[in-house]
Length: 290
Image (cartoon, rainbow, N blue to C red; front, top):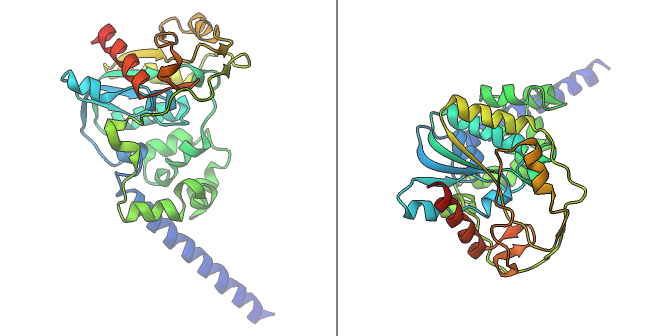
């Protein structure tokens, strides 16, 4: 019995040692990578200067054409992330400030992402490699993760929990410095097709006060960043289109660009503009504010 317990003890020690080694290795690789996604690029860089940045979900990532700002002489980058909720956007902005980014103007897409204070599991995962090494990430998620202590203190737990996003495959690509397309086109991910799935239903969505959005506003005010908040277009065949006007009953400062591009030929799907539509929208914003 004694030998059996010793054997089990050795196995447990070996597992713990393996978990510690793997955790250290994965974390080290992610902490030295800047080319795979926008989150690690922000966390692992500092002292950048921008005249204009754009943030939000896919409706920012696909809709704001950084090149049009650059053509006008502005230094610009699109930090929109597909699937991102305002919870992740607020953290990304705080990380920029923490890393001494100098930002003059922030164009923030706020529309379908303001109907709840929820989070995106897939985008939350991108921050998890840094929860033990970056105090801002750690403090931000302390009251947002139900299993926070497991994620932070159990070696390699977070890499198992979020394996599809930060597991072996992604770690390996980061190790060999294989770039992804998320940083191409100054952050824009253009959609090239035309007019698919041209119907949408917003009748079950209700805009609400959003703590993450209010944190973004507070962060901009404290750091002298001009905040331009806009809704972005949906196709004409959308039910519950008054959703966008309801946003203004809660946040009147949000500017409604929902109907600034209307023809189906400018849409990739009902909820996303294609590249030609994105150029139209971006040009309107530049003309209105720059």
